[in-house]
Image (tube, rainbow, N blue to C red; front, side, top):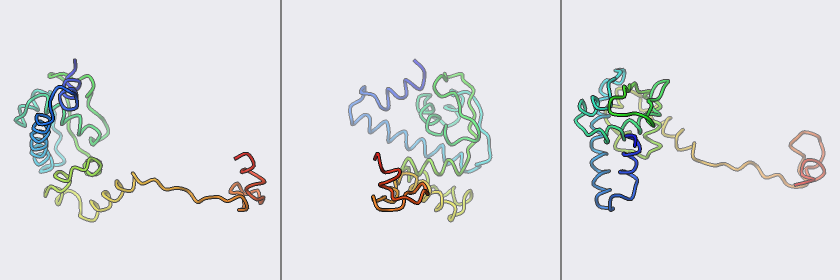
Length: 169
């Protein structure tokens, strides 16, 4: 089994009762916040190393680091780490794209992360509001204007909808 499969089985599987799952996630969120505080203190740094080395650097277990790498993977600049196949000795790289990261934190409803004070030095308050609104709007489904049978056909033929494109609808 890969590290990612082990992490997902632990975090999302049926192996733990609700109390232990809550303990796991609460502990994970605290560690995650600490890692992000360090990364966001110098957002231009590129962090590299094996999964095991990064776990040691940030003072956590390999499985917790695996969960962190899985969570941050879509917020990296121009590449993704081999999350599905990585092992303890797999070389990984963390080079964040601040706007992608902020957007994805909003999407995950991780207010304890997108409200970190380190963001003040990275993105303006105005840009953070824009990204927040963009992300929230991305989940909104808007219906198109209803076309009635006697309306002009939207194809531009000049006929009524019921005599043109709406004939077979």
